[in-house]
Structure formats: structure tokens, C-alpha cells
Length: 134
Image 1 (tube, rainbow, N blue to C red):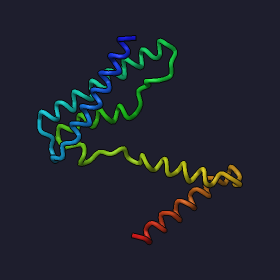
Image 2: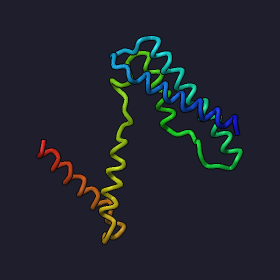
Image 3: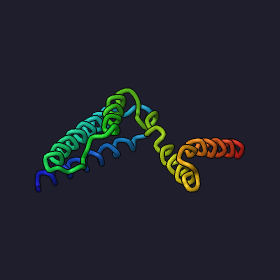
């Protein structure tokens, strides 16, 4: 419906505004940029909440709030004191995909109870190799 489309459009505009604000490279965001960033995050959370309520009423499993929404609010509040580019990343985002790849490479021909041990061995060998190349 048109109301849902409006929420989605507002959400996308909020995300766009958020990323535009994050293009600032100053160690401390200018007050106007910081206020726009914070407003964009709160708007994003409101839109996601409205979409989640709609999806639940429709029996759909989408638009759920995640831990990243929580992180985004922390980023917005802490942007009052420092530019998020200087301190925030999604910690270990790539680590989980690395573990998934290692796990998949260990699964074939390995008894299930030994997969974790094999994963640990491969991870340690990879880190040792990486350290020796640096």
C-alpha cells in the first residue's frame, strides 16, 4: 500500500542521509552534520519499527529490528563527541564469514564432532602464515 511505500521511502532517505553525514572526515562532526546524522538514525529506527509492526500484522517475517539498529543508535549518540568514522566499525563482521568458509572447507570427510578442532587448526595455521608474510 501507499503507506508502506511511504515508510520504505522515508527509511531509504534516512539511510542515505546517514551515509552522507558519515562522509565527513573531520575528527569531530560539525554540529549541523551531527544533528542531521542523529535525526537520520532516529528516523530510520522509527520507520523500521513501523514496518516491523506492519509485517507482524500481515504475518510476514521481514523488517525485524536487529542488533545493528541498536548499534546505529549508539553511533548516533556518540557522534556528539567524535566522528563515528574514527572509532566505529561492525566489529568482526568479516570474521564470521571467514569462520563460515573455514567450517565449510572442514566439513567434507570429517566426523561432526571433529569439525571444530579442524577449524581451529586451520585458523591458527592461516594466522601463522599471515603473520610470517607481514
